[in-house]
Image (cartoon, rainbow, N blue to C red; front, side, top):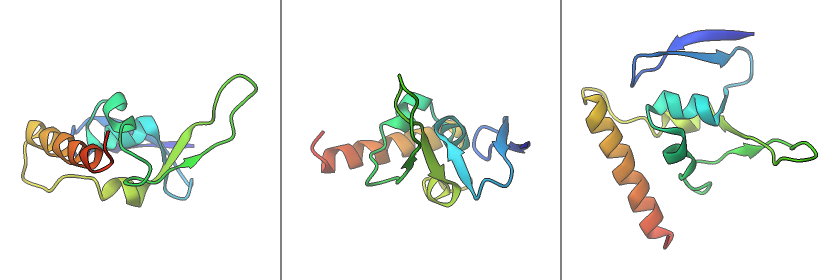
Amino acid sequence: MRIQITCPVSRYPLLVAEGDGGWLTSTEAAALLGMPLRTFQRIPREELPYEQTSGGARRSGRRKYRRADVEQWTPGPGRSHEQRITDLERRLADVERRLGK
């Protein structure tokens, strides 16, 4: 069963699975942070751990993120949506620079 919550960053409705032990899909986690999915997927596993589900015969598994881990990436309150995105992009650039990417 899925329940609707409001994204704290974008204020858009977001459907999440209920009773899943606090796990989010990549799409749900990106929406929770208010960033594009492609940008979210650039966050290295060392900075934001995830579990990989087993894939089917022709595709790789999907990523699942713990809600608590994703919420640690949530920018502080009192910032505009644009400022929050800038903060997240700056943090991601710092991580990539440290990893030599």
